[in-house]
Amino acid sequence: MKLKVIRASYDEETITVYQAYNSGIATAAVKYQTFTAPFKTERMTWIKPSFLWMMYRSGWGTKENQERILAVKMKITGFNDALKTACLTAFDASAHLSYDAWHHALKTSPVRVQWDPEKDILLRPLNYKSVQIGLSGIAVHQYLNDWIVEIKDITDYCSNIHQLVKANKLTEATAMLPTETLYHLPADIAIAIHSDQDND
Image 1 (tube, rainbow, N blue to C red):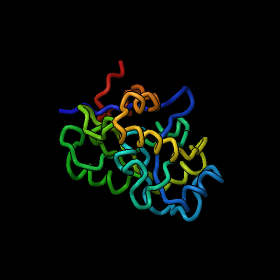
Image 2 (cartoon, rainbow, N blue to C red):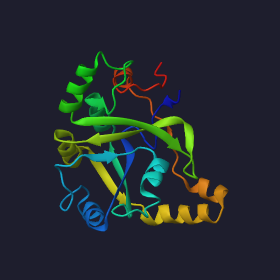
Image 3 (cartoon, rainbow, N blue to C red):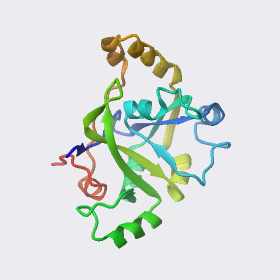
């Protein structure tokens, strides 16, 4: 079984998550330092603490409507608050009292958590899972209005790493990656989202 842990770039106050959008949404987000039209608040928005999982999902920024990669610094308190209300996207008998209880939580929770295999620099699966966090409803509004600290467009940075990967200059490419370390969740949150990390 693959371990489910969160690795991220973070400090005492903020944690960096990644999102990919088209130019219209990304340009407005960088200008206003939050997400505004044409971003749609009624849709679930997914944030990813793993840089390489974002590269996998967006194809290094080559997929349609994911051409611009954003690094979003958000408050640690907001990140934890989101996870406190999260529900796993899939039923897990070891994490839920019953299928009905999970299904009710899924319909009512503003935050969803999904665990997917982490990726290496060649976007191959690793032996542990990385978290993807979906925000909807009140959580989206909290994210936009209170939790976001800074939004940077890192598209060129991602492209530069990708070019090194394509040239098989993997040592140089790896040296450019952001530093991500194990993020220690409060024990109650780790249990709620079924993380395997040691919080002793």
